[in-house]
Length: 287
Image 1 (tube, helix red, strand yellow):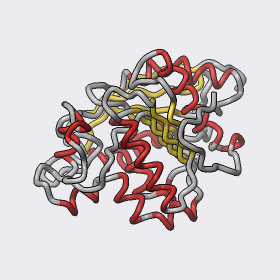
Image 2 (cartoon, one colour):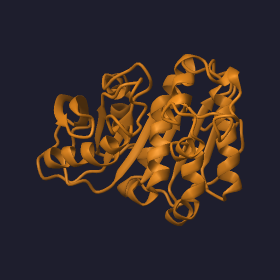
Image 3 (cartoon, helix red, strand yellow):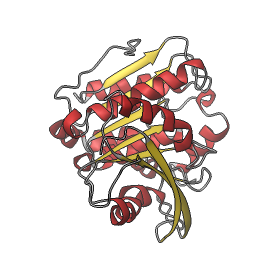
């Protein structure tokens, strides 16, 4: 098992949680053998995207594996919808969070597991989903990395300024309250609400957390990321915060930031596990 390359497998399964067939892609070592126990990394894509997101990230995973900066692992990305999805459980519809937390990993475990541990990484909408899932049950995860996460500078439906709600972000904002404006439902679907409710568990597990955002994000997500940094600091939750000067939501810095996030997750897994994760100041970026 010395081949440093990785291969993509494409598949689908009938999801009870989603009430439909769900396409997904899996990235794994080219010389993976049945029975080999590896960690699982759930790679969550952004809005208006799909499991094809993993194909775009494949060169980063493969290069870091070759460099010894990412362990042998199974990386998997399911296709989830934006409208009616948003990595949420809908009261009268599909349960997309349950798909991520339970059904999809269980399905993967039959084919590629059992897994030694599970980590989460996501960008934009996927960053929101990764943080929400991790903070909802921190004991289950080895690490979480969020790149330009779709989080807002406010904790209730009324707190979020209108400029922070363009297009799909406005849809997410409404969806967090299931379209009702109910504050309790909104908080239950909020990264901040999960962090506050489970702060003691997150601290006790010393969950490695990365929040990375460009300081020139076109959708003003840097304001939400900075707000999240403040909440986690207030709660005494250790995390790594990177606000990258001049970087937007996409652009030249995006590839380097994605690589760094993958490296961060890799450092928390198995033999790569690092013992300390600290809080870093806004503006710091580690390459």
